[in-house]
Length: 212
Image 1 (tube, rainbow, N blue to C red):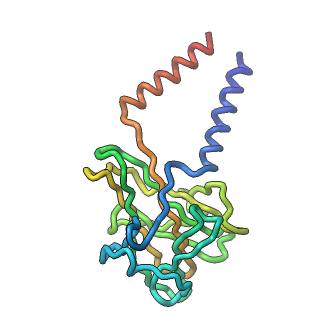
Image 2: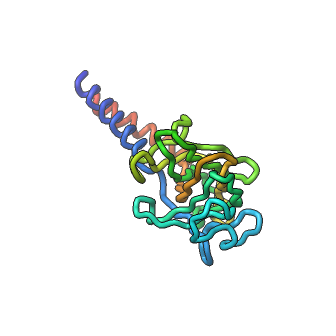
Image 3: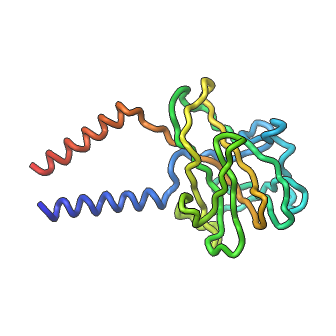
């Protein structure tokens, strides 16, 4: 019996480790341009915040393509010249109004910390937090973008979807040397307390039956 319990604990630990090594939630690619889900937070314009030119001094986000990133593309701005790229807003749509969701931001960060690969993100424009590899809250998804650069995910909070079934995440480049590679967001529905209670009772029932 002891060996059975030990085996169950090992399986549960294995599942927990696997969960930490994979992307959590449903991925939504950040997309600018007409029909896209990402706009300049100040102007609401889907085009005036990005360019296809990879410059570190034009104060714009650069749209770049690279297969290692989700959907093969991402937006980047550089802090080499303290580039003042605008704050952007990515909106997730098609959610269930009144339902709570965990929102995570997907970005890339260097794991050697020789430079600052950072991002500022939050669920409101006036409350952004800086994140980077090794900050104690960001997690690697297990995807290596390139040598020494990992795909990261960070939970920026839990929020209730609007009556339109939308939630927005706000992204900015902190004023620092380095760069910011923003890929997109994920959402994960949070079960209601009653549902969680039923799941817990169901799990206990299974354990009791196994013990017998």
